[in-house]
Image (cartoon, rainbow, N blue to C red; front, side, top):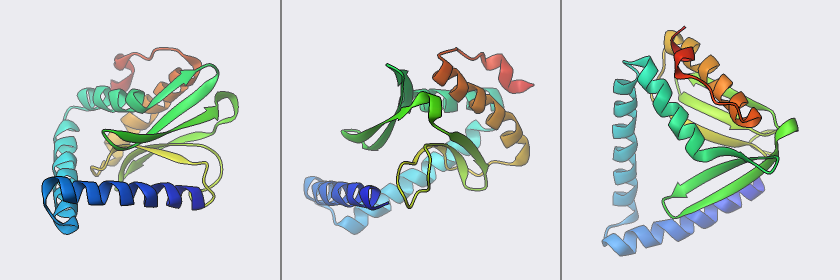
Length: 162
């Protein structure tokens, strides 16, 4: 938790003044702009979820953009902006993971421990509210996708609409 707070604090210090100085806007307007971007992204994901197969393909793309296997390590990238991120490497054979889906969106979590202890990385795939039917299709699909990444086996999109 302390490491994560330090990382987040450093990034906030680096990004906030830069965003404010570069655009000539205050930190408040930057936060408002960011909140508006998140609202638009939630609306876009809500619309995307009307077609569960297309949503699955997009969430798979987002997952694979941030998670990969290399040299026996499960690599998870946590992005803070287009130019800054942290790369976490977990031993693939012993790294627990889970897919969470529901009222607060769709997230894949990697690592052991708790968020307070550190060692846990969340890969947010959507902040849209998902219903039970959507979760019942997406959780197994993305679970197979994560297992495929760890085992380096491609997963078919046909598996989503069972």
